[in-house]
Image (tube, rainbow, N blue to C red; front, top):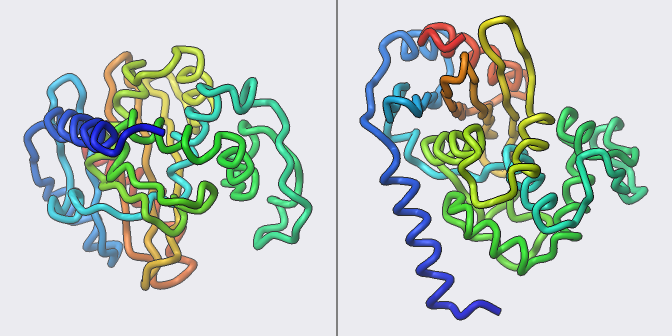
Length: 264
């Protein structure tokens, strides 16, 4: 087991590196108007890797850490591939046979299909295969948020103690988009492949939603990045969701913000 002092130093170094790479903040009136029109409380931030510029709405909230919920499926996939817990994103994992809150989760599947429907039991099985110490070491290596996973390997991203800010999400995803994480290029390429959502002649959009229902009201995430002709923009949105129907606003509002900022 890693000595506590060394583990702490790794977290501090990675945390400093993440925050040090975050550029100047520009508050966007256009994005602010979109949030007001939608009647939503939350934040949205875009990080332009080429100019080291952060642009968004509500800087204070953008710097506030929250439970990542299913947005952690991106680093979970990356860690699972990197440590050999699975051979590839199409290796089938068992969901466990128990009734699930969402019927579509009640089947065995690989990560390619599981990430699309945000299949919690599949990713919990992946986390158990990774194991607590390997998971802890790799979350620390990524410098992911507060890098705290506690002692339960299959729940820490759903109920805590792991937390991450919107700004930190953009820093992590920018590095993934550009092959700059301390993992194999094969693992990063496979994760980018399964995170892809849309593509046209001008850009490719990648992303993942999250729903943290431990908060009151619930907190909704949408994070990802856009590759626009080799120019990378990573983004993160989180909003309060008083009603289940507010979940649809995550992608709707996120896309509207990306359009307003000329990213899409």
